Length: 155
Ligand SMILES: [Zn+2]
Image (cartoon, rainbow, N blue to C red):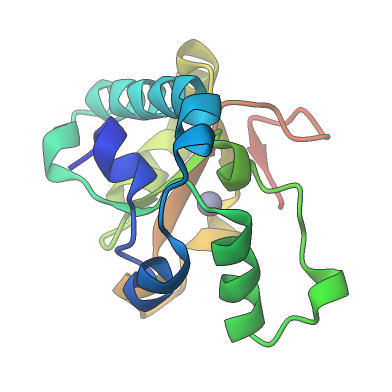
């Protein structure tokens, strides 16, 4: 379910980490709720534009606390000083939507003008679609442009 609540509580991808680190501080919720609502509504919009029902889609990652973000990279073995801290997930300006059959990413890639219309930027599918593993296929969408400004960008 694509929704504000599922965005800010998206523990689907890392439920154990979410349990440990994901208590949502009220001040953060206030600070970022505007961003989260904007991100969620733009993602729902682009899903509808490609003929998907947002209520049937799932966030694998929405808002990440700094602690959760650090833990995700630490679990992958990335040294602390090499962890990228510019992720839009930290400020509720990015969401990952599960894309097990790759139909979402493929549809957006074929019509990149939809990103512009919806005010979104997407990470290259090379970075988010893992061949042969539907659990490691998602689409990363964000509401702020990357440094390159490209609608579809390499993270
Ligand atoms: Zn992402």
